[in-house]
Length: 318
Ligand code: ADP
Image (cartoon, rainbow, N blue to C red):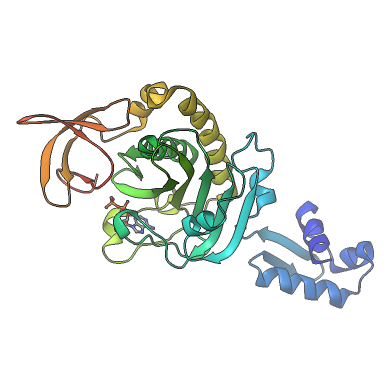
């Protein structure tokens, strides 16, 4: 019944009286009032004015499988969605359910222990970001799995819009700050991949970051001054990802290289490549067909794999 009250508010042009709602739905005025209050407690902004009635001013940004899949044109990516109110990490949730179909999406309103690479933490506060993981079952070699991160980065940059670019290998930035991070994990045998889980964290409606993060993290809200609807971004990501991923499975990174170069801000930049035990400086000039970064240094050309490295600009994070 509450949903029918909501539908009436949504379809009304301007105000609708409590009497009209109660008459149409066959419930008392008092029951209408109770449903309105319940909707308010769920985040709907409902104004009430004496003699005019109720008006819906704003709706909360709710994620649901139904809303994501509305007019979505994918074949298998995101066709099955596991929605969670809370989880430790959507990558863990996906790994624990790896028997689900190829392309299943796991998404949570909050991650209590979101993960970055190399054991780092990823902040995933409730309701204001997109914390999701895709379960994939590609027929590729284990050594090629890292390349999927590049494909995810492209889909995320395109899905986010707002001039988002890729910072090789696994971050998406707007300007000089990180709006999205990607963490790809897999289960494999020597020659065979059992499954891949790729986690994507997008800061959407975060109003501000604290401490160290304020220097290097941003959100779509911070960049645009507008609150964004998360389901639309998720859908755009899934559609972009499927198109790019199909190309990748057919032709490898080579099939996407031109598009990738356009989206990647690292190429053409002076960078520091930080390995666990040393740092090298040079100019990133390109990626190769394995998705590795080619860096020209004073002592020659170096090929950098994404495994154990972090990339920093010479003057800052990007
Ligand atoms: P990098 O390789 O850029 O150092 P990772 O890919 O390992 O980073 O991601 C983890 C790092 O990202 C954390 O150490 C932290 O500095 C940063 N971080 C954590 N949460 C967020 C967030 N919500 N948005 C942007 N950056 C974050």
